[in-house]
Length: 460
Image (cartoon, rainbow, N blue to C red; front, side, top):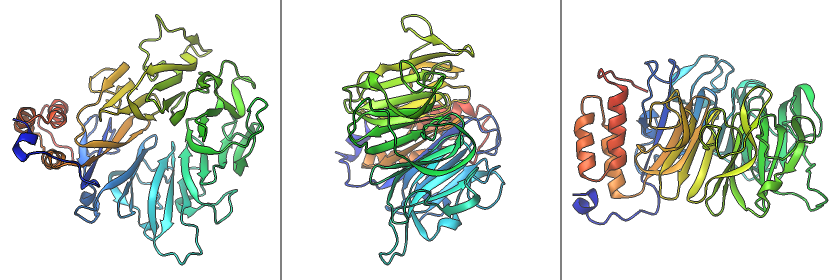
C-alpha cells in the first residue's frame, strides 16, 4: 500500500511547507566530525536557528572548493567548511564543521549566494529601507575581496544599480546587473575578466563592454553568468552562449581560439547557433548548457568523466591536449531531453530532470557524483535518495548539495521520517519506505547503512 492510498490524494500546496538541504562529501574533518564518510544528512533550517514552522525553508545553496553557503527563508545566510581565506565571512580564518548564521549580515535580507574557490558573494536587500537604497546590493568576502567580513561592493556599477546575479571562479568574480550588464574583477592572467587583454596582479572592477559578435552591432544584454576555474560563460537574452578566458581544454566551446589558448573578450559559441539556451554552468575545465527543450550540451575537459560521454575513446571524436588530457572543444549533446538545471563542480556534473530526479557523473572518489562507489562515473548515473522536490543543485570541489522542498502530504511524511533516520533504525525505516512506495527515502536509508557499517554516528 502506498502513502497516497493511506492519506488519500496528496495534492501539491501553493508554496513549499518544509525544505531540507542535503550535503554529501568526503569530509577530511571539514564538514563532519568523522573522516572519509559520504553521508547525505538532512539539514532542516530550524536546526540552525531559523524560525520553525511553515515559513522556515532553505531558498538557495552554493558550494565552493571546500566550503558551503545556504540562504534561509528569513533572509539569514549560513556558512560552513574551509575558512583559511576568510570565505565563511565571520572575521576569522577558522574552519567550521557545522552551518552557522552569519551575524555580519543580520541587517540584510539575503536573496542568493555564490561561492568561488576561496571567496563568497551574496545579493541582499536592506531589512529597513526608506526608499533611498538600492534594493539588491552585492556583498563580497574572502580571498581577493579585501575582507574576511562581508563588505558592500559596487565596483564599476553605480550605487543605485540593482544586482541580478553574481558568480565566482577560482580567482575572479563576475556580477550581472538587472540591466544585463556585466562587471568583472580579480585576476586576469588568462583573460577571464573579458577585457581584451591579459594582465598580472589583482584587477579592479570594470564593465565588460566588448563582445565578439561577427559584424552584429546590436547591443548584448546578458541574463545569466557562470564562472569556471579560469573561464567564464554567459547567456544573452536571445539564448546565445558567450565564453571567454582559458580554453586549453576546450571549455570555451570554439572550433579554434583567437589568442593562443585563450579568448580575451566574450565570444559567441557558434556551434550552438539556432539553439536557445536557458541555463549554463562552468566547472574546472568543462562547461554545460541546458536548452529550452530540455537538452543538455557539454564541452571541455573530460578526463574524469565530467562530460558524461563515457571513457574518452570509441565513437566520440576527442582531442588530446598538451598535458595528456582528453577534451571536446565543441558542444556535444549528452542528454536529448528532460533536463531542467545543471551544476558543474571542479570535475563532476549534476543535473535535475523534469521528472524530479537527479543524475550525476564525473570524478566520484568522494561520492559527489553518483550512488555507486567508483572513482569515475563515466555516464549519467542516478542520485536518487533526496527526499522531496528538487529545487536547487550545487557542486563544489569534492562535495555536492541539493535543496529540496516538501509540497505534498506524502513528501511531508517522508521528510519527517528522513529527519529521524539513525544507523540503528535505518533498516526498519527502509523497509517501511519500500512498502509504502517512498523509494527515495528507502535509498537514503540504504546509503546511510552502507556508509556506517559499524553503526557509527556522524553529526554533520
